[in-house]
Length: 126
Image (cartoon, rainbow, N blue to C red; front, side):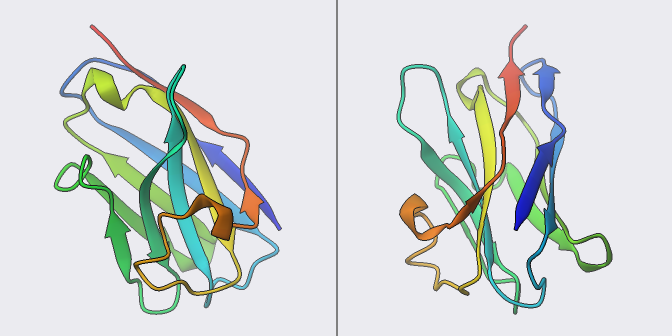
């Protein structure tokens, strides 16, 4: 299984970015894909995840109403649309996947994800 994250960049506060996570080697009809982020000097934190069968999602409170996760089955890609970005959203964003379809309560646990992408930098600054 390989994950390729892309779409990061520099954006002004209030702006938007869309991250992509291309997934290969994983049956896209089951499993869980999540986004995590890590800012300098801070621990990795959960952002959002989606269960591929049924599209059940879970969001961190800090991004609810601003970020949206979606998937495109034909391209085996999961997207993270980030709107109204704030400086505190600055971090390296990682996508992760696991073959198991986790319940929402388990989704924020990074240790449950077996596969990880390389990360993409998001910088929110004026």
